Length: 307
Ligand code: MLT
Ligand code: MN
Ligand code: ZN
Image (cartoon, rainbow, N blue to C red; front, side):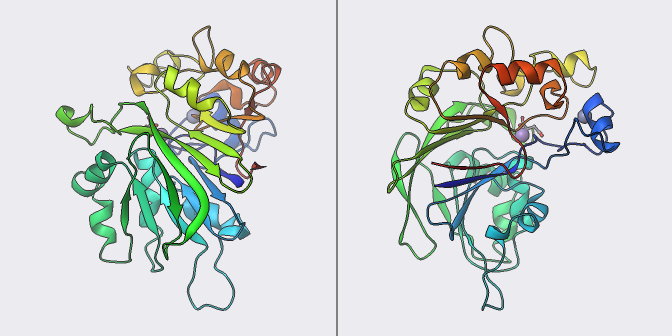
């Protein structure tokens, strides 16, 4: 399976349009230590021809332009190599790119029932898209392994299992629905030919036993690296909510994701969905050295892996 990080930043990207944090200022000024990043998404393929998007970022247009594998195949007036899109939640940064991919072609969207409902009722991307293009919506059932089909129904060579990583609903979902099962999932994806396994989990509320179990046997893990500390946004005076309250386990600290990730025998352990305020985004800083020392990498747009 080929894996490509299309966008490694969290919502807002780096630099974020209205942000004056140290990283955003450095990225804006062209500093060599802080690379600009687009919003969170990855692409995977078993055969190098048909690709599945894992989330569809608000920056998908730029991401397609930067990767020849996602550009229209020769010989067709209109065409795409995108075979489907899998959504791990209903957040704007992970789903609004579907609106950019509206000019025809047919591919399926895979999500849990909760995410489908929210994208029909409250952020009606599904409803709006139906006037533009065929986007059959397929259900991802929690904890069930299923073959991932190509648009014509034939096997892609990949199997997928969705597992819960939190119960954090987007802010546009009414409070009474916000604890729905399937709000935030991770994806366990296996290439049936090579046996290679990717675990993709850009939103992780806490390191659970289920996550640890799922991580065992993975060859590549793309994990939630949103915040360095729990109080990151509170300390900057830009939010009242902690990382954990937002559904993101912080990277650092004894109960952060870094010591856990460092103890796993996974070949590629990579942070994605990294918020622009996260100090590990500075290639020259002490936080980056700490991540490096643990054998973990800070994802960059365009990073590729093969498992
Ligand atoms: C999240 O990852 O928690 C959300 O995407 C936050 C947001 O950008 O609204
Ligand atoms: Mn997000
Ligand atoms: Zn910033």
